Amino acid sequence: MGPGKTRQLLTDHFRCPEGFENAPPADLSPESGCSWSDPDAMCNGQLFSGPLAAIMADTLKAAHRRVRKKGLTDQLSFDAAEFIDYLRCERYVANSTQGNKSRLITNSAVRKIYYGARPILPLGLRRQFQKIYLSGWEKVRFPNWPVDRTVERVFEQLLVSAMKSRNVDRVPFVWFWPDGVRSCSIMTHDVETTSGVSFCPQLMDLNDSFGIKASFQIVPEERYAVPSSLLENIRKRGFEVNIHDLNHDGGLFANRAEFLRRAELINSYRQQYGAEGFRSAILYHNVDWYDALDFSYDMSIPNVARLDPQPGGCCTVLPFFIGKILELPVTATQDYSLFNILHDYSIRLWKEQISLIQEDCGLISFIVHPDYIISAGARRIYVELLAHLSNLRSKGDLWMALPRDVAAWWRLRHEMNLVNAGGSWCIDGKGSERARIAYAVLQNDKITYQIDPTSK
Image 1 (spheres, rainbow, N blue to C red):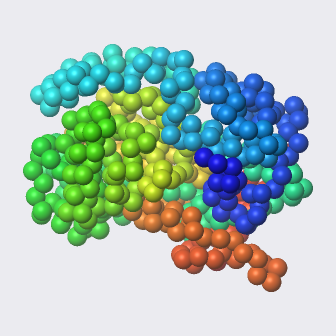
Image 2: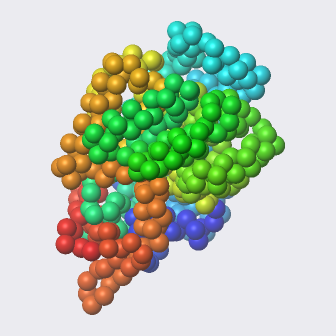
C-alpha cells in the first residue's frame, strides 16, 4: 500500500475537504504521547498503550523497518495505513502472544468431525464443548471487551496531528449517517435450522410490531429446504434476503481451492436469491480471499471476537472497504453467545454495547437467530431489545435500516465531497440531499463532533 493512497486516509474516512490530507504532520513531541517515527515510543505512548502495545510492538517495528525514510510525512501516512489495515483485517492475530491465537481452528479434520456431528449433538453437549473451547476468554486483553474502538482512536489521533499542523481547531466533514442521526443499527437473522425457517413468519411479526425491518441470511444447501415462498414472503413484507455461507458446515475457508469452488456456487445463489449481502457460517472469514465473492457487502467480521471460534476482531464500529466489498462488522454479542455461553437472559450487555458504540457514532449490528429465540424466555429478551431500539429511534438518536440500505449509503458517502461555494461549505455528490455537514472540533487535544442541523 503506497504513500499516495495512504495520504487519503483522512479524506476517505471523514470526507473532509480535498487537500486536507496533505497537511504536514504535527511535531509529535514526547509530550504528545505518540511518536510516529519511533515504534517503541508509539507502543508505550498514548495511542498504543496497555494490551495493544504488547500485541502490536513486533508488528509495528516490522512495518516501520519496511518504510523508506523519505521524511516524516511519508512515514506517518504509510505507517498509519498499515496499522489500520492490521487492526481491521486482524493481521495482528498472527503476531499475538496471547492464548487466543491457539483458538483458531486450523485442523480441517477436527472441524469436519465437529460440524458433521453438530446437527445431532444435544444442546448441552454443544454448550460443554464451547465452554471448554472458549475457556479463558475473559482474560484476553485485546481487543477490548465488550466493544473495541481502537481504529476510531487512531483516526482521531491522525486528525489531531493534521489539525495542529495547520493551526486549525475546526474541520468540516460529511457526517457519518444520513439526516444527521447519531448512529445506525441493523438487525440480522441467520437462519440455521428447519425450526428457524418455521419461526421466520413469527419473527417478522415481532419485528413489525416495533416497525423494525431486518435481513434474513439463508443457507442455500443441505441444512434445510428453501421454498421460494419463504423468500417471496420475506421480500414482500419489506425484509431483506441474504446468503449465509453455502451449507454451514464450517469448511468454507478450509483451503483456497475448495473456497473458490464454493464461492462460485455462492455467487450463483446470490443471483438466484437477488441478494446483496453475505455472511459466512460461524463468522469464519479470510479477507484476502474476498475478491472471489460477488457481493456488495459482507457481515462476517466481529468487532471483538472473544466468544467466537475465530479469534481477533476488526477493532472498529464503522463500515470499511475490503477491496470492492464493504464490510459491515458485527458489533454486538450474538444471541446464542449471550444466552448459552454467558448465561445472561437480559439486555444489559446489549445496552452497554449500544451506548459505547453510540459514543463513536458507530454501527450497532446484531445477529439474532430465529432458531434460538423460539422459547418464551428468549423471545421476551428479544422484545425488550426491540423496544429499546425503538425508543432510541423515536428520540432521533438512531437510524434503523436494512443492511443493504446502510451499504448503499456508505458507498454514496464515500463518493461525496465537501466544496466551498461562495465562502460556505456544501456537499457535492449523489445522495447529498440526506447528508449533513459536521465539524471535528479540537479541544485540549481531543476531538468532538458537532453536526450543523441546517446543512443540506
